[in-house]
Length: 426
Image 1: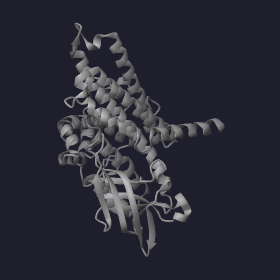
Image 2: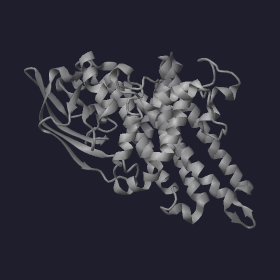
Image 3: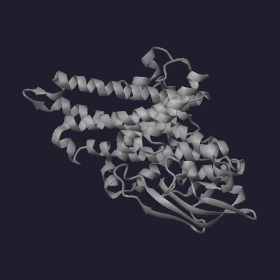
Image 4: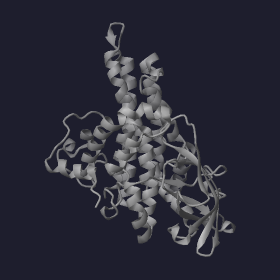
């Protein structure tokens, strides 16, 4: 049976009581149980981490610095992941974080996924996006909706061999996602899929795709059904990679379905319930975007503060000026507020209580904070911050997607307002 390296590390380190000694902002030790004196249960602070969560966070931080950081610039310039990075993600169990042991996964919780995404994003937001989308959308749908046969067929491969993609968006169906035009026509014990999907993350290297197609157009969005489509299916092709502003290593492509025959047993979940699944699971994905953005913002700030402490102007280091200190304190507070929103949404998801509003708030606010943070950091760095010799400009480019994918900022604001209206009218 596949032995998860990170899970083993979590158990081993926890057994000897190892703990980080320096609690820098956003670091694992800043949120360990010892930070609060004694371990607390579910009623404790949302930033409280269990031993497993804490050790996973620390292990991933080490992995990111040692194996991913040296390749970030190369991957950004080449617009693709280095194979060694992808392999490391699988070998260390990061592509099956919540997948059960029986399917070759790490059997961790949702919060752990968020912590992994946050730590990866501090170093490489593109890698964080890759891991986030694979875990929160593809694996999550397969685990919760798949038949036992589907889970045994696909989850071990998704955890150990290849990535998956979630395909909802189309050229004419973005924010209005359920107006999609891709169709699925019944033909014996198969469905024949035709249509085009656009902006599909991870699709350049994915082995399996969850395709949303309308199997009964006369029923409107109630005909939307989720199909498992393998990359090798005849008539299914992946188009060229998009040339993007940011998260360049993460592949985004158009998918073409030309009379693709999909076995009826490849329907994921119930017929006609695809719209419910997309809406529900995207809410979890939005918490993941929040984790991406707080990690990105923290990583950018962490890369900038040392420069401010070293750079001298008018006889003093830049950090010593009160005007600079106030700006730094403001940004640090905003990052922490975004982290609290994100962690709270994650804990609500784990508790099985409604989190629609909180997920939207986390995604919206964390994306805004990431943009403000990266702009400020470039301002503070001056001319060097505008060059590719320093990471601030890449963080700046990478953060913009947070306000766009898995629901734009305006869509999040509309969701928040809609839920609030119901709360006040109830």
